[in-house]
Image (cartoon, rainbow, N blue to C red):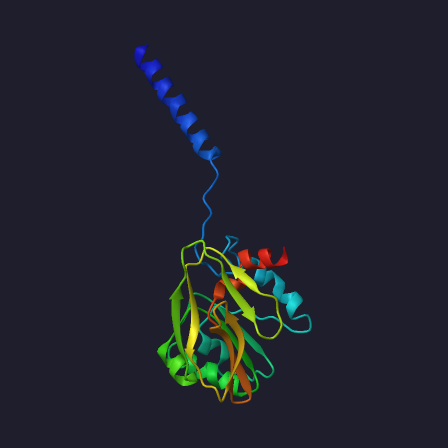
Length: 211
């Protein structure tokens, strides 16, 4: 009988503990995850859902295969390719097809923090980063084309272009301290747009901007 009471006490203690844990507010997941199905603050669900509205007159094609398989032997014209991720490090085959795609009057938009040396060497750009005061600092992005300033929280650092080809590059965005972080680079008949802060294109920033 004593053993039964002991097990009953253990059981109810576990139930109370579980209920207590479930009642606690969940910690926000600040992981950077740019997939279209991710609904965490730095996920890509909202931006992906807005694409049909942004490109009302266009056809949206999604691809989860390598770039060279997506672009090779395709006769794309006046097409926009969008890539958003922490890093963008294409191999030589991907990069070759990407550049061929751009040359034929297509545009490429890439938002990432880290880029392959092959790409930066090809475009004659160099990307660096600077630290902010703390992890809750507000990092401001200003678009020189007239768009309102965008604020980014929970980010202790920011990436920017330390060097770029002035003959073929147009600055489209700068940070609070005046450093370029969004450019367009002419390549053949098309352009490559590069943004060094992909979290601008996440759920958190989209909701904050709308509000």
